Length: 128
Picture (cartoon, rainbow, N blue to C red):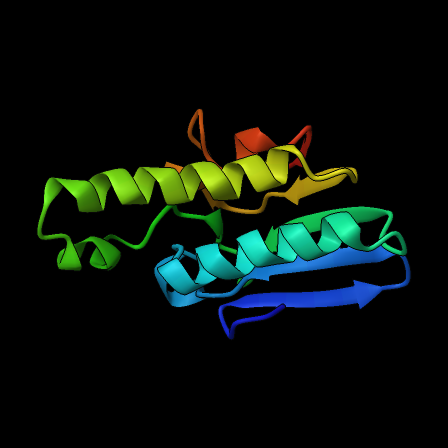
């Protein structure tokens, strides 16, 4: 359930998901989005997990949105539409997760990390 930039760990009945790209203020890559989507699907099925905490690694940022270098491979309008659909799937996975989900925000929370349809606003509880 982990990619090196998305760290998953368990502490008893609590699941922790850490965004770990501190040099880029935890900006999200495609692999991170995919791992987060898969983690949400697996956590939804795991009755031993009672709550989930999302947090940024490094102390300077929660999430700074999508890493803009990810867009350098876009060559046609459909690429942008596919990106929006990907984000919608990930955000929907967080919104519909059947567990209390908390964003532990330290530092920057911008772009897809904090805007109206981003990670932070898909959660019911945020602690800054």
